[in-house]
Length: 254
Image (cartoon, rainbow, N blue to C red; front, side, top):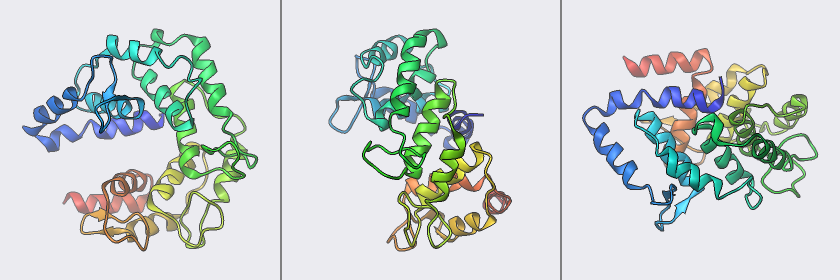
């Protein structure tokens, strides 16, 4: 199962917790859709990055997608000629939520080729083509883009080797090699990649993530002042891949 399908499967449970508020959330999400088929950023302009979350939110709430207008909006990006790695992954993710026939095979192949152009010398991926080493976050994005377009990154052993170099001195993962401490989002991205690359996951990773939990939220790093929602979401998603994570979540559900 792809990263997108895994996260969507979990997110679709959210309406049960939202209860009567689910309709209000749906109305808000729909209200962020612009006439051109894109979703608004903070300035009110259609933004590919925000469109990913808008479309995924509608799917999570089991609401109809604006397929016709969204398809027109996405076609305006062509094969992603002007996009960086982050926005290429957004484009691939958006197309994965449209009907399969909407994206021409030639454009799909071209997007994949552009994602691959962000491969680093150590076998990973980075948003800067000049980077010597890949990052956990960008490898995660590249993996998602490949999967969304029905493929997998070539030479997975090189991705594994790059990821192994990103393990920090405290046993977690960072987005740069040689770091003394890891971060929660980078570690969560690494855990997800470890699973999809069939790498062994050390139980200590779950312990490290659980140690970041405070009053229901997760810190981004050992020295972060307060928990944040991104770190909390990514940590919980990563923890479900380990026995210790399942045990912790089971206790939370009691």
